[in-house]
Length: 93
Image 1 (cartoon, rainbow, N blue to C red):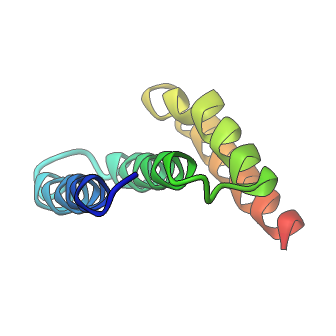
Image 2: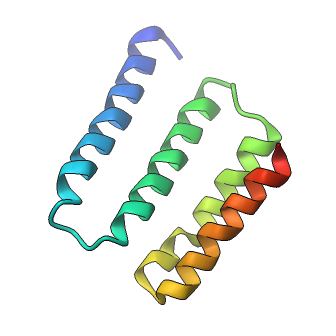
């Protein structure tokens, strides 16, 4: 990936995070965690495109994608999912 493409990818991620922050003032509070998880997923995609990913980064990406839809369902399920992501990260350290 060339420097201009990389800059574009990071600019898009920054824009997503800033627009999300602005939108969260009017959105339900539970969207905040979803937006942060989504931003993490997008960062992993950039790392993958740069061939800077690793097995532990890929494994967290898979867990993010497998459960982020839970944010629209039962709050207890989404909380359990987020806690499982945290524990996965702890295990990877």
